[in-house]
Length: 103
Image (cartoon, rainbow, N blue to C red):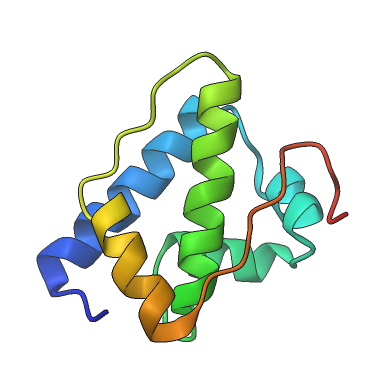
């Protein structure tokens, strides 16, 4: 699933906004996902080397944290319809819950 530059910008904005809304920190997300902080940042920023599977896993992790904080996450590019396409193209991994520290 290739994103154009507008979509990439929108994904970055939405990931950052939801990350902040959930009150997550880079350190917490890295621990929960079993990643290092550089991978968390690279994925949020869609920087060179960010893996599509990581983007979806981080999106789902953030969405769950937002819901757990009592808010409703809204994603305009990483939608459920696009999730189906992504699952068909490269398979997706389940996201851990906040506070699970990579378990």
